[in-house]
Amino acid sequence: MYIYAVIMYSEIKTERSALIMKMKKMLALILALCLIVTAAAACGESGKDGGKEKLKVATSPDFAPMAFVDTSKQGQEQYVGFDMMLAHYIADEMGRELEIMPMSFDACTTAVSTGTVDMAISGFSWKQDREDNFNLSDFYYPGDNESDQVVIVRKEDEGKYTKPEDFEGMKVGAQTSSLQESLCQEQLTGCEIVTIGDLGTGLLQLKKGDFDAMAVAKGQADVFMSNDPEVALSGFQFEVDDKYTANVIVMKKGADDLTKQVNDILKKAYDSGVYGEWYEEAKEMAMSATAEEVTMPDEPSGSEEDGEAGESSTQEE
Image (cartoon, rainbow, N blue to C red; front, side, top):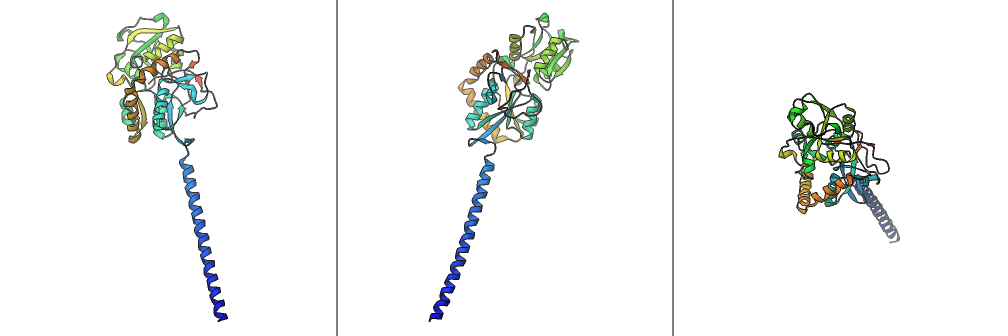
């Protein structure tokens, strides 16, 4: 009887040890799974700030009053203008944290294509090649001064050129791949078009005499003339098709869900009547002493939270 009891105790002890080992293994497995889930969650938080997913928006801050720099501010707050107000509105409506990614105008669409940013908001007009290569938002309409397209000249030539024939044999500057370049090709057929990277550099070239005139949006012309008495309107204004009289947001081809979300937000903004308020505020800021149009390098420069924006200059689309 005693031997039987010892055998039974031994078997129970063995079974208990085996059960404890199984429980330890199960606990280790549970802990491992918890670590995996935690790591996955941490990865999911990349690109988020304080729990909010970031909305990365490319812009070229050299095109007042749409996008430019307020030198009295630092970091993300320094990027101001109509398009920047729109970017903040979209991010707020999405419940996301806005991150402005300043870069050159040409780099904006490249950043969209590569997925570096979610979208580009930089005064883009509709163009067929943009329609072919990107998802474009519905139109948004800043104001007449952005849909009107004009030609500026040196002050001594103010009002001299009122019709296309007046530009025969002249050199006219226009930003590369911009609406203004297309309008020059279509309507100023007798001129020599000189393409420029950004409008700030273009303004300096115009004043130096590298070319005779420069095609820009009326809003941009107003900013130039308010800050520089050496330039004036030529007297000529382009005829602009309705499809070019508003702006679009550029997103990656195939980003249909994002595009629909943006379009819904644009409709809400339009219905609320904020466009006019934003544009008037942006124009006022663009005329201030701290407003500066800044030329950015071709590569995205990040959020610029601790540094200066870049070199002084300007743009359009």
